Length: 185
Image (cartoon, rainbow, N blue to C red):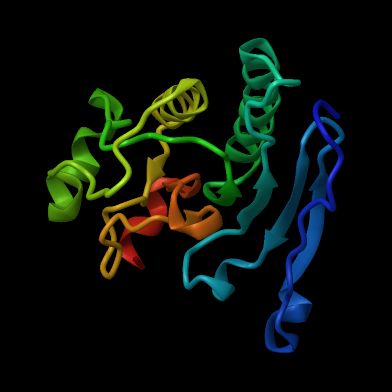
């Protein structure tokens, strides 16, 4: 694992769905756990790959090449999930600032036509964009994923990280999903 070791990620499973969820993959490169969920948990046909991921931020000890390598490992895992599951939902602290940039390419045209909330720029109070943000957008575009950040009901693009004394505000946390979930969101 690259970067400072931390306490990893955790996923809590409610007792009511316990029998419908199993561990599918635990990442060796990033702090990530991937679960296989029965489609009935999300009311979708087929099983769902649910990823909980943490990617370390750029620091004095972590260069842009370290960030690129972490996102490369994440891309490999997300691609493997999408090859094994029709439905993929990834919740993550990507430490990625994407501002109001879009991940949509021609791959997403049909989805954008069907869902009005996807036809406009995402809402955000955090306009900064950096390397990790650009890599996340590239992954979303390449994998035909959607980022729900600033697009879903009740999400006004507010900050999910507020530093000491409220001086540093950003939106490093995102949800990435395959288009199959647009019908339930």
